[in-house]
Image (cartoon, rainbow, N blue to C red; front, side, top):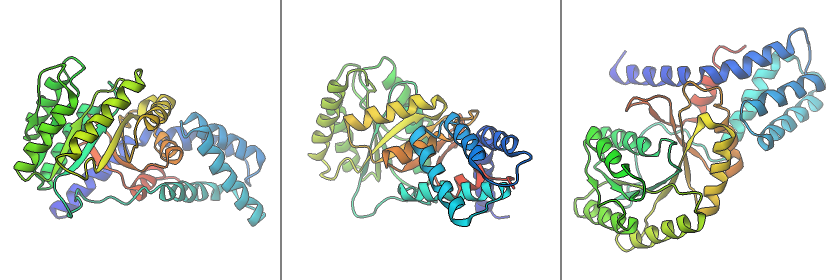
Length: 319
């Protein structure tokens, strides 16, 4: 097996392990629910509905999935319980496709302009700064020149934390003192990045969601200032969510979508939780693609989200 084969196997093993508790929770309970039953009837669908909701797929998305399965059962007249996993797999894959979740396989960036600017948002504690550090590492490993902007100047130690991650990833961090104007930091970052022919810029921001108006104004100011340096900026507004919090992640996603236009999602801490179904629900409800998933503490444990690999791991070994 060549080096790329070994890398892909390690990536797949990490994904399989990270989703193991979610898979066991959903399919273990589903297997018990349909034991002794030969066909998919109302009782089976009621059990499936409860399992999906309690696995943090979310009520609205669960209802959508159940409705689609009901239509297939009505159309085909008889659907055995042994077929249910295959149908569920197809419907989850279809939902992820409909919500623009791609088959991301590499860390390439658009080549029409430089730098590509990613504005990163999310409340404190979700792994936002960690995600930025891991993204910087992955982009650098892909041969990109990366700059980080420490524009979360409100939270104590935020600047120090992103500097630590910048050092680990081996990329420059543009910063000012705590309490400085975040827009000024973003401006300086883009100026330095542009002057040094950087490929990608990641801008950290404060996560004061309890003060929505202040956060909205701050993000607008950052965007306006960045456009003076790079007219296309930001190319991406990435919302980082903690997948292990389940429904709380849903609520944060909704609130942030009211504050600014979210274009992509990073869902962290999926390893060790049975709440991986939140990936399906949040993407479906926001109509925003999941682009990255976090599956561990290591610097390499942030992966590009690939819907086919995700569904394959979720259903691996399920008959």
